[in-house]
Image (cartoon, rainbow, N blue to C red; front, side, top):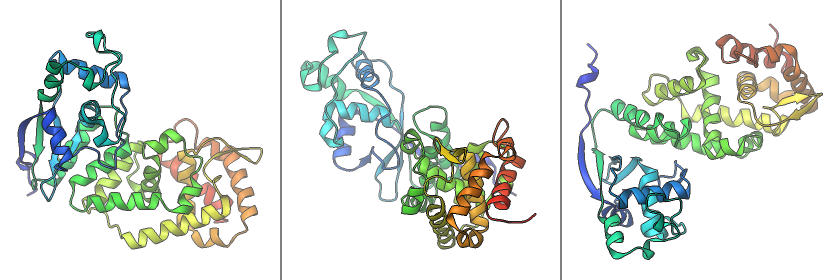
Length: 355
């Protein structure tokens, strides 16, 4: 009989750290508060300043969550903005930022324009000695529950993008760091980078390139799991890979990925995944177009690789401009039959696959 969810536990401790202690633990590399898979800040200086103001007037600060890694170091998995804001204020050089100058404080307007060293001694000590509750997830325990915990802690807010949440939550699973590293490695592949040059800059900053790598494998390996919601589809595919419910051969998949983007880069440059008008590429990378092209190339790399680049570009332009293709990328484009039809149209019209 399957183990009941209520019997699957993780070991946690609740500890109160002062912000001064967190600074010292960070300086001693005992707390990691700047994991490379997240961006350090999304908060404005005004948001950071208001946190400092809240500390000084002794408003409650929400708890943070940390996970203990295999060597006992604590990694911050929720609360990055709060902790980093205080660290920038108290000890900015430890995170390679300029010291925070307070601004936008409306309850204590006298704080505006001040840095940490400009505060009175009693205020500096209050910031350093203010405690924050830390929930520490200890080594061991149920991997799935830890994985779900991180996703649920972060899904409700807007600080992390869906791919950043996937990247971080993968670290809760044995072997998950390998999969995250694999996505990151492939996102740095030169011909992939050339192929997605039209990806929106904001999407790039939110790990949109890594999400496209994941989307490539989902299109190739898991269209049967698509239910019309892109985020849930990618989440579900990654879940199944991490928990070994689907086979995933790293060497084999890497070879196919390289082969596909070698072809796409050579034949189309950075114009494979965009809309066309009068035969000319227009605008930014469109994810639905990405799915259609990579789905076709991954299935028929030999046909794609053998054809003349100019002919392929002309066929791609006419296909993506066609009424048939527009019908499966407009309203309701996330329906499963439209996803499959998009791929089929590129297969048939660009690479010559017959019905």
